[in-house]
Image (cartoon, rainbow, N blue to C red; front, side, top):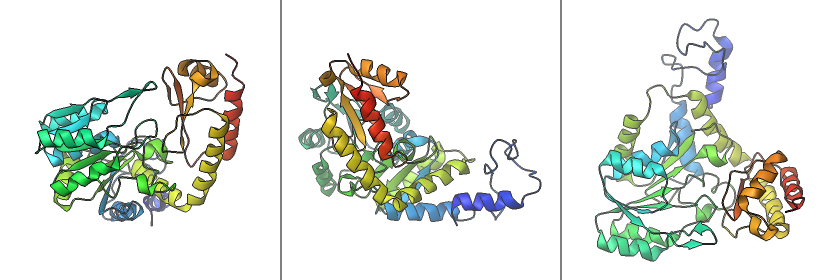
Length: 333
């Protein structure tokens, strides 16, 4: 039984809800709280065990506080000074403040309007200068580029590696397992809500270092709520199950997106579902193309001076890909 099935089973038989939440099912019939030993019982634990199998990791944890919650818990659990890219997410800086550790920031080279992923050599040099520090890698980045996986070799020297893979929750389902860090980093944090059919704030953490499991779970308890949203937890499980059942649809979608790239100039990246249209090749800025597409009802994720970024997921169709292509082709600067 899934978490959603457990909620529905309760909702179907409850005549009167004399318990929280106060909307009593009026806002959403499946939004319920803990019901003595009936719900959630071991449904969440079972869902997390299943998630660990999907990601070929030792353990998986569902997060109702987004990947920010996972990053903070990971840094607190590792408890070491942290080597990070200078363009790391704000949650990393909040994490080091909570953990009372220091950051060693690595500068990013800029190419074609975007910060480049940090190469292995910069991490190695930083570790040599800071032998007791841990590493946080950002892979994939916002634009679908994967970092240098060779940095994982530093684990052999006892270096703890945290992966901010907020934009890579789909990798293990769409043929990019070889680029995923879910099973290889000591702790990997992925935003299910960014690329999977999951409610906003739903994220997944994988833990592969046995020595960090108890510390990570404790940090999650400190940072999390005692009243988690089971709608969100259920949506995380649902999104993983859905993607597992629709791997063939991923292949169809990514093939359509490869054809899209042959007709529309895009950034050469590693994630076929992350489309960064090179607006400069169309004679405009990324912001101008963003605004044009938005006027047509096609809203991008973001824009830079050069690129307009679109995120595709398993819920999109080949028709969606074709329609966006025609909109972009219709632009006349």
